[in-house]
Image: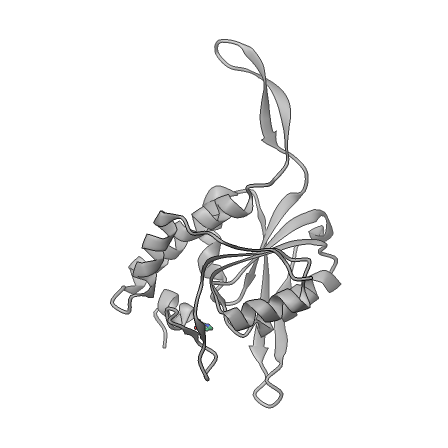
Length: 210
Ligand code: URA
């Protein structure tokens, strides 16, 4: 069994993604576009949140009207590029809690090693939305999801901007219970672990580093 995978092929997302991919795009525009796409991804990933009705009075009448119910949200950023998706998501779900996971790749074993992990105490009772723009090899995503499950998270979704077929398959194998949502599914990974055609190094492009 593999997890549910959805590409959000809305024309606005595809349009903005094209400009994010372009090497001519400046750091400030890259950040703005990522924020705008993240708003739309937040809208899509929360589409199935349950609602309940409450009684309110409009200036004209009393009505039963829907509000979000059920689990509260926690956005989890995989450092450092995941941080670039937080502002846009928080525009849409401003009350969400935020967790951070830092992982680096051990140069000898090539396995991800955790250097930072900070979550809200009640992570087990929240819907957790893990964000990282680039699902490349899938190794960090797999390790992050395993660690979150160890810490008690039981309801998790994964949202990225670009996925490689290789990373997606690995993630789906390792965590078949976690739905994955992306703005695009690219062609392949290259020999350096970059997504092709991709957009380059997402962290460097959003933070203006190299
Ligand atoms: N991380 C990036 O930022 N870009 C890629 O293409 C792959 C991993």
